[in-house]
Image (cartoon, rainbow, N blue to C red; front, side, top):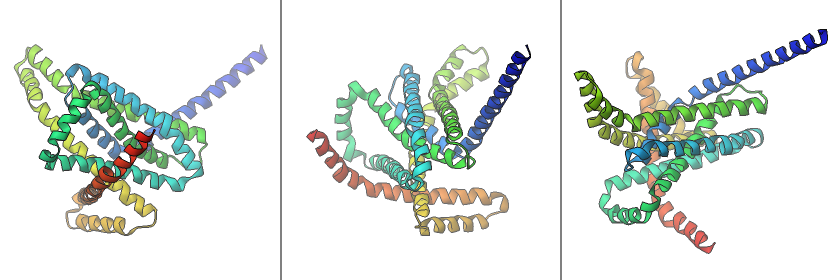
Length: 321
C-alpha cells in the first residue's frame, strides 16, 4: 500500500512539473507572439484581397484552405527550419528573410504598377482570367499561401528571437508551435469575420425588429465593399512596407548600417519636433513611410528583372523538364 501511495505521489509530482512546463510554454508563446503584432496586422490585411470576386458561399471554405496552408507553412516547414537555422546557421536567417522581403516588395509594387497602368495590362489580364477560370480558386489559394509563407517566416523569426535564451530545443519548438497555432487562428478568424460582415449585416437588416439595428445592417452592407477595397489597398501597402522594413533591417544586420541609421535619425528628429505625447507615434509613422518608399522603389526595380529575366529563365528550365 505504501508503495502504491509513493507511486501516486511521484505521478502527481511529474504531472505538476509537466503542467508548469505547459503553462511556461504557453506564457512564452503568448509573450513572444505579442512582439509580432505588426506582422499579424499585415497578414490579416493582405489575405482578404485573395477572396475578391468569389461568391459568398465560397469565402469561408477558401479562408479555411488558406488557414490550413498557413499552419502547414508554420508548423511543418518554418518551425524545423527556424530551429535548425538557430542552432547551426544563425547567420543565414537575415539573408533568407531579405529574399522574402524582396518578394513582398516585388508583389506589392507590381500591383501598384498595374493599378497605375491598367491599359497596359487589361488585355493580358482578360486572357489570363479566361485561362484560369476553371482553376481560379486553386490559383488564388496558392498565391495567398505563397504570400503567407513570407509573412509567416517573418512572424516565426520574430517569435523565435523573442523567446528567452538558453532553453532546450524542445521548449523552443513547443513555444513556436503554440505561437504558430494561436497566430493562425487569430489572423484567419479575423479574416473570416471581415469577409462575412456583409452577410451578417444583410441578415440584421432583414431580420431585426428594431429600426436602429436595421439601419446598422444596411450601413454594413452598403459600406463593406468600400471597406474591402480599402483593405486591399492597405494589404498591398503592408506588403511593400514590411518588405522594405525587412530589407533595411537585414542590411543593418549584415553590417550596412547607413540606411537604417539614417532612417532612425530622421524618425527621431521628427519625433522631437512634436509634443512629447506624440513623439513615439510620429517617429513610427516616419519610419514606416520611409520603409514603404524604399520597399516600393526596390519592388519597381525588381519588376523588369523578374518579368524579363527570372521568369523567362524559369520557364526555360520548366519546359526543359
